[in-house]
Length: 116
Length: 107
Image 1 (cartoon, rainbow over the protein chains, first blue to last red):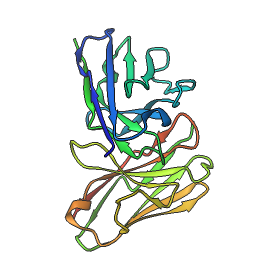
Image 2 (image 1 turned 180 degrees about the vertical axis):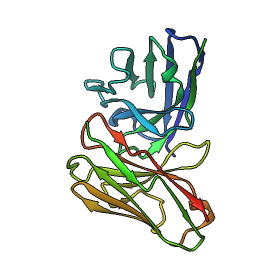
Image 3 (image 1 turned 90 degrees about the horizontal axis):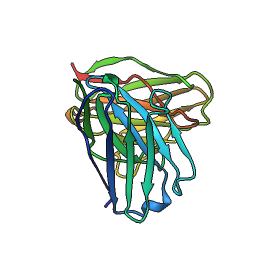
Image 4 (image 1 turned 120 degrees about the vertical axis):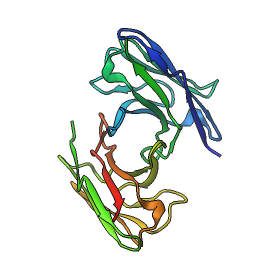
């Protein structure tokens, strides 16, 4: 059974940093692109970033480019999102998703709150 | 960036009805169009990919159609568990973009 579980969310002050993790199981993690998608409270879905299976390709939304870094460790079946220079508008639930057939499996999400 | 425009933004229907939600892309997306269902407090669930292909385990009451820039999701014989918010997404080119969502409510 495919499982994705995010962790690392929490309350952080504006300008601060946070590293999200996504633990994957039930599939060959190293064979798949992976996505991060976020959802601000009461708002719609926003694609954040994607990474190729070998980490050779990374893509970012303009809203996070230069502040967020996506990475992965295929030996640990883990996906990461390093978030620096956090702003109030980054407050959201962050989901990791397997990038197969669009995004076929999603984790339950982790909440990031940016507030002083 | 490709803009995705969904309509309507909200929709009221009764149990047993069929409904259709539409999604228009600002340029051609080669049928790289997905539909997701989201219930309050839960992660999105993938329903349809490649405009009309059903994800594994998704009931056939959900169907997708369209090509080019115009797409639709039809849900037949609505049941209480189908009342949720639905999103389209293009994954033809980065940045991937979602529609603004359609909230399907019980009449």
